[in-house]
Image 1 (cartoon, rainbow, N blue to C red):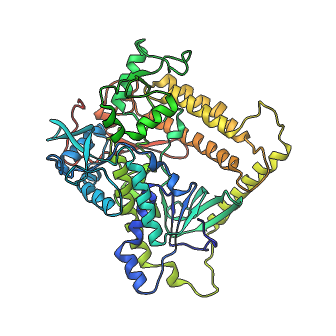
Image 2: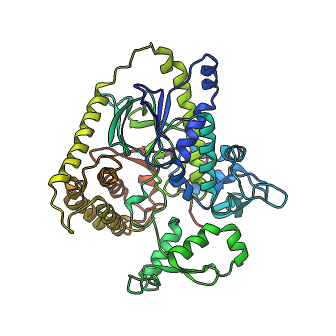
Image 3: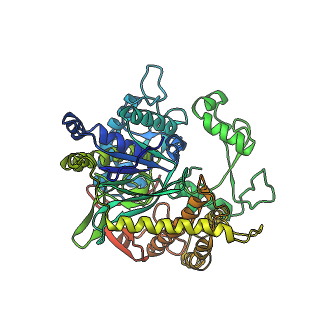
Length: 549
């Protein structure tokens, strides 16, 4: 489902059609501002761009639940959820944002229920909830059932419900379009639009938009292994492996002994199939094991990108400035690609879907307020077009040139079994990052990682070429572009890791094994040059303490 005509100017473009992007679209269209525009006969021009069909978005893989203090099954309060979120993030959490997250969680879950999410139910019909690591009652005194779930397919349920509601609202989608460039004005103070590559036709589009929302998801592909884990558990697994108590994957007995056994045999088989059907299916399909009777090999994995594009609680992108925050006009973000700073150094389980849906909705409403003040349709004159910003034209032409070069090189490239390709490079990058910057790292490993990226992987990415010159559905083009983008992102991640000389949350540095609140109770920001700057964490009413469980 893609537009038959690309407008010369949009009120808003949403990049990404997972939980955050779809929530933003619904937040926009359900706002009072849009209702008022429609009453005046003005229809906003909005486009959602997705490199996948929306129902294949990664939100669908979320299994555990969405956190909210509903209090339906046992006593629970939003203040307890707030405390757990701050503690779970090892105090690298902006507490005003975390407080908003916890306060609005119950309403967010109820809204999802009304939109058609089929949550699992108690016998008397209430939304069922279960315990999840790090969620407690009475400020850490005992575990509490706070994760609302739909068997182990809650992400799938949320994704389908949001998509269906967007279809009902008439949201326009451009599917299998890959956004290659976000374009700002000359002084980087406002958004001008995006450049997108239509995979189906091989066409590059300059898309002007007065507002752009980035909802592109996280960066798990930087690492070789990505299923779900948490920082404390991951370090415990690594400690067992380093002590010589690791085991090899039974499917590959000669492989490194980098796994430990997960024992699920104590769970009743009927109950396991009832509440964890997808987990059982995955273990059977990929490991050839029955978790009701067999031990399952597990190892630490990349799970979630805690950092991202810095945003306010209304989704506005900002950069740090001497006097606080400099807002980039018309640029927004939501979901895992963003950082409103509710997750700090380690995201609390169940808060990812909540973050995406809640702050995606808020960002959509924020965009609606801007659009209402000056909608594109109100300034349209029949037969007239809006002039494209020169920065957008230049970016589009530059990207067309890069893609044409990749396609032309397919004719002259020497075809040998040893020739490099984007898929091999992405796999090598994942293995490389896992070896140097995963569960534990130190200055030596980080220096090796920086050198390896700059001297080997990035030069390799620049030499990649397409192996076929067809423009139609040539997915190798997007793979090459993605490989190059991942290398740039890896550099930024390594720079931030190297600058933080402490261990906190999911970051464990063996050369700086202790948390250092005196110097590093602050956020780090990395620019395109690799320079790292800092801003203080917003502490409201929970002072840093011990993160013990």
